[in-house]
Image (cartoon, rainbow, N blue to C red):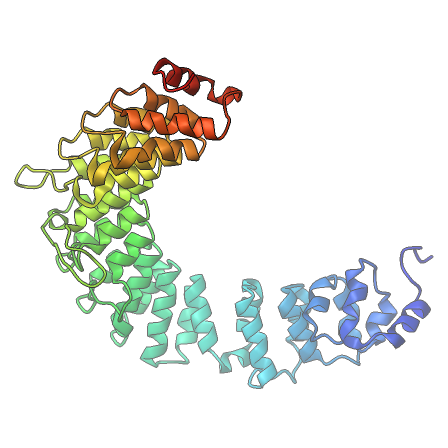
Length: 459
């Protein structure tokens, strides 16, 4: 007896008369079973991907018996779904199947691009599919299927196909495939501006980078116009072990161009990469340069600037405390106003570290640090800066305390009022703001009003 949840065949046939074939997948999506006799007789539009993915594996028994369906289209549906494999094997027995047609080519394309690897392996077993093997070569290289690659390569001896297969294998980390392809003397690993090495470095494929560097044809400093070389790609993708391996090659100079490697690593906050680069003395050399985009500064100071701005205390310490062969610090923390950007980002620990260096001026750029900290509400940084004798909280017409008051940072206002270096004009301006805004009765201003009263600026 048919379940109440499953419509009868007559109900389905009535529904199907009014529903175009391409919308029949909506029935499957409803979660209802399609009766077997409907599956065996109805001319489904199997080119609709939603229908293929919502059909149940058991439905394909009846679909295979359906004489109204094109079996090659049904095969395409199974391949798209990725199952069931038993149905795929039955459909591949069809002697009329032709992989040289556009539809046959599309079947291979679907299987490979939907990563249905079990389906691809079954297709490869069919001798007719081997009439088009380039796709299988790239798929095998991408997935590390070395046996299929060896078999497929027999059909194609063109070096450009093998070179692109090498690139795909290196990018996806298949060392055995890369090693096998490199044994072919016609395969040039340096093709297309050494893209194979660059892709391996970009994706952190350490063993493959090591293998490629052993080939004298490979140039690790090569790159396409405006693109990165292998070292720079390893840096910006945070692969410190690959960076270390590349720098061991005498052809690699980590300071070129303009020390962009350590600047990028610090900008992206990659402490492991920065530490590897700092172990190479070539990074420290004075490579000052100037162009329309960059001012003339040592790039190592630019790296310190980014480390301070990002608040990476470990990186700041690594750069500041590193000494060159002359025994002097490689970076000057007073350059590029590192402390201003550390203050502006609220990094108290970095500010403390920078202030340990006598070259750092806490009142740089007209007391900009105290003004900025007051404006952004960084109370602890304000307290720390006020401990420095060079800091003048009244500078630039008392901008620090006015900024704090106008932004509602009342704790900072209280802290600045306690400092004897704040001039009378600053105190007078705050008392005037309180009078003008009638804030006497507001409990939030209690401590500020008490301080001003003690100075006889408020009654």
